[in-house]
Length: 300
Image (cartoon, rainbow, N blue to C red; front, top):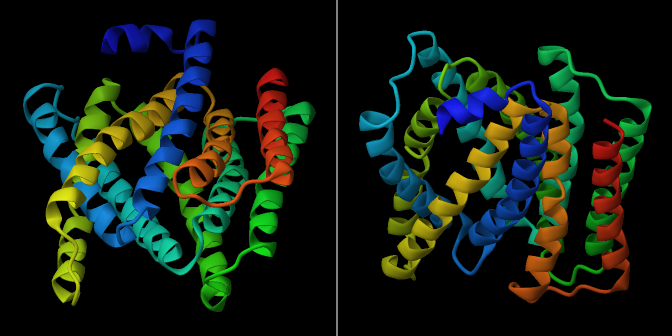
């Protein structure tokens, strides 16, 4: 599997594979966000998810994939710090604001700064048509957030804090997207990076979630929470793994932008699963997001 993926690097087939992986990551990331925002406290949900994928990744990291090269250990340390910061910000934002408002702001802020980071780190450039696509996509994303904000019925007392946290979280999305791309390109075997990333990445949140659960007066049952954690762990493997592989096979900036079609999937999940209202204006804004992604891809 590793040899086949590596053989696709720098080819048209690799670019197509990166496209498919980015779109898959978009859908699964929206599912992942809904799992964290669902009926469980987002801190507890994140702790259960992280504990699950750490346990699942450990056997692969220790016994299946090649061990990381010596230069990878500082990279893993930096990746760990960045992702912990991202998760703390995301969980706080979800605690303070509605999913359909917070999620689009997070995902809208991320790709713009990821494109800039891809230029600074990897020397990637976008054509004028692609920048038009980015503008269309961001207009749809922030338009969706503004529309959801206008018709928000609850949670307005903490909304300013939630929106501020969402913007900062988006900056961390751009940071981890570009740095993860650097990390997965720095090792010979991409699955070495993925296995060790997931084993390390899930170590911080479970203790925080456990302390939060212990402090609760009305503690939720651990069984259903851990079931959600296992399912979320599997989704995380597929979602984050897909986008990391996409950034190795294709352009980091394009993958970052295409992943933000997750906002469309998130709105649909918010409507179908979380029972949040969706109307024709939201549908039009979601179509705008999709159109922007198509323009980015066709303009490349």
